[in-house]
Length: 99
Image: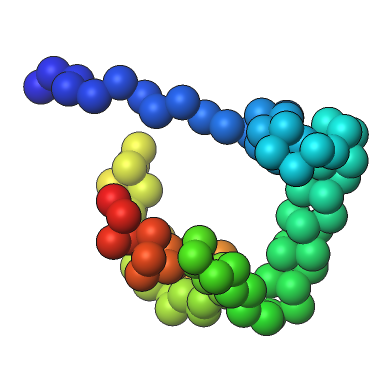
């Protein structure tokens, strides 16, 4: 099996804040503070069990997972995986249509 596609470029907070600063005539520090604040608000809302919808991008929400049986890959022994919660992101229709 051969790899056909290279890994896509990854943009982090520094790259996003530099781009935001340039596009909106902000300092890089101010743009980074805005992105950090946005991230913190999203995390706080999701941890409180709220759904966060960013128009044109998608929705973050917490979903419950059921208890299930799994297998230890090392020993092959069956193990019980407890119920829990996970954060999911669902891309907006407009974003999916552009792909």
